[in-house]
Length: 444
Image 1 (spheres, rainbow, N blue to C red):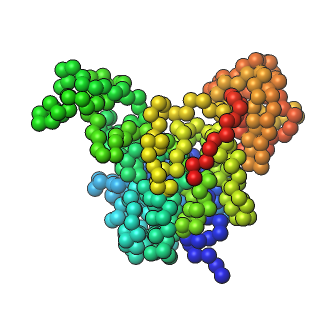
Image 2: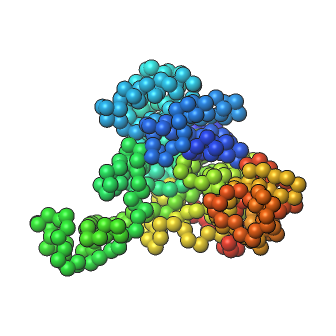
Image 3: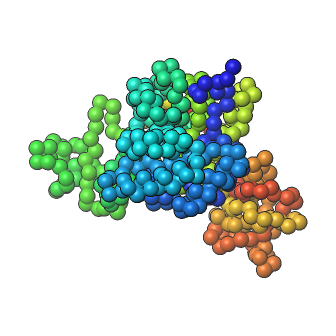
């Protein structure tokens, strides 16, 4: 008996491909499929190294590996972009991607009619939060829905029960937008860059101060509310916009201050699979090769264990903690979100156990060639991370390409040679060990 789309024994591991290079690393470290954005019509338009031609060639290269690639075209286009959008869809449809990821209803209908050989996956931007909406899209011809991050596991299970033929995809790791699945207006408000058109400036991550009862406040508050607000309410002030004070509204649940911890569901994959998820999605087209590779590697290990019926290996949580993060949360998957979901003290984790040191690009007997990303020096302990394993060793010598010995190599300074007593495998990366790993607790 074959599995239905929502109950397959090993769900798909879907990774971001923010560039042609990241696509190669994603597959090397264990992704089953990748998603990559159309340069002008996805929500990474501001930071997308792909060109139309390189993205189209990536489709063929992916299929040569026996893998899948989903092309993201999920902006909500105004009238002036519609014709160009349609031409772009036709250009990529000809190359036969495994799906288009889309959000606009009219253009979804157009794509289904004009390119029936290319499945359509409904973007998380469409905010599908109930099974009736999922059923509507399924009946329109959408084959998969990328579920909103606001859903709990019991709610996801209901989607599967009510619309069993529909494929369900859900995020399992990465940043969480401080809005309903990315429909954010902060960036547009502050500097006229629309997150819904692919040019988000991450205003939610900027530094803000809080003020109470500011003297002589003359901000953007109506006269009818001014006196009430000035008698004890608080105001936000963005560091680069002094004097532009914004009132913080509060309801019975409290105040939500814009910096969510990162989603981590590696310990919940079994429950998510049982709820009907057929594709586990990792966020992060703009993240580093190190982040991408280490996250994929460990989710791959967790999925392999799941397929073999093994219990979850808690050590994978510590491995994930080696990547840049804002702290971790299960967000809405486990319905217990509270103030611990937010990170109030810093937009980024500050005491990481390891830091991305460099990309291994070659080797010769006794040496590896490294493109340095962050400062390393003789005496540092480093970890060489590769698709098949990892190895810790001390740096005993560093040489420039000229053969000159140096004690320190700085990020951005180019390539150096580092002494090693093993041969690094392709796609290897180097991280500098900063401190011992303190075991990170599970959030399940």
